Image (cartoon, rainbow, N blue to C red; front, side, top):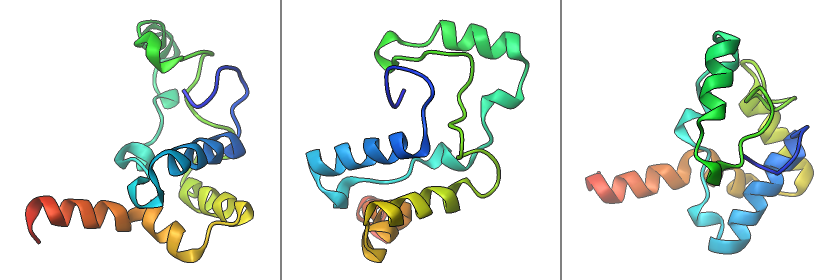
Length: 112
């Protein structure tokens, strides 16, 4: 869903973050809450293939897996953070993307 062809790399994922940042500003970019959940790739391959086949075409799903090489396993958020650093994101920008933006928005919604 990050780009139209395989393979999708960590750098492609960061390109996606860059694109959204450029559209709406870093204050509106955040790592999705499902990023910490293990991929569907761990499930039955037949079920995954069926799920990907039925995906909404607007998602541009392709291939037979969901995991981005380099972002699998328990340290994927650390690997993504390292990619943000390589790309020149500041510490504050990384904090915003990894949680501060969510904290601000949810605090406004819940008046915390």
